[in-house]
Length: 447
View 1 (cartoon, rainbow, N blue to C red):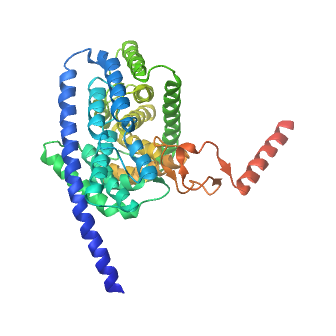
View 2 (view 1 turned 30 degrees about the horizontal axis):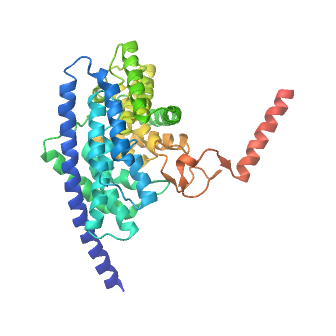
View 3 (view 1 turned 30 degrees about the vertical axis):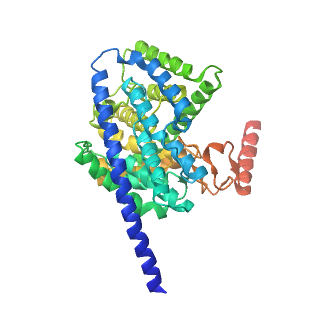
């Protein structure tokens, strides 16, 4: 019996190693091409002072192209992949790949406030989906596994974090459940993609961040307190994103025209603020924040709004780069306010905000370890765990399935989409405590 088990598992390991190496190489190559085109396009467009004036036309073109050629390419990439895995066994239209690539390029090059990881994850998943038929991966679980490898390869290629990329792909599908079955192939595809990207001459920045003068006990209390506020900020960001996208969706005009409106609003914001910091990828702002430079205190608030307008009005791109922007600049603001190390709290803010917004605390901790240092990762783990709990049952990826409630005091339908969790249902014990609290409050008011 043991021999049979070993043979079966060994055969499965070899099979998925070969498949993961293949998809990692393909996705890494396409991701590298995308990043090179994006860097070249941004270098060219940013040589003009008023490049952002093209945003209305770019958003219109992006929306029109997606509407006509590949409607499933709409949105911010990773969300559509999660939806495809849960609802269509990972099946993604092959047309999504070129459409998503080009729509994202024109959005970001013109100054749209979005990210580059979502498109790469969706492109990677689309490539994997295409090859599932060629490799005759007929059962549903194998298809999902292979598509998840595409997500991890795309993520790792963009951020240069192969371990975090694999963990993110295995963690992001569900809230409260980790998909161990995809771990090995995701790790292999992530590393292969990472190696290919480096071979193509695309390198990622690492930051040497120290813990400053705070003691371990002081850091512990700061992490808990900071994590609470990061979680609350994530709640606000998710609500702003949802509300603005909902309002734009309700405007009853020709869909691509919404892109023109969205682009004009962003141009107006640039003229009012006199700064282009809140549009585009924002990579320079993130870098400055992580280097300990002082960032404008309103940056994180403006970025929430510009990102919501971009993605809601028809621009194409990811959500995680704006999440990194908001988290790092809020951490920078926190450091300024409490006279703390700016680089340290920018770094922790970045990963803790990701943990809350995407419900991926483990991947967020690993990003801190891979990008910053094991010491920063250790302390940021507290902030990541706290922010993950405080944000509640909300996410920038509403198609995530809620596998386990974040508190035993709450009841929700198992494996429902987290975007459908509107009201919190309490257990009987929690209702009793809630009732006692309000009765005591009434008595005190009478006195």
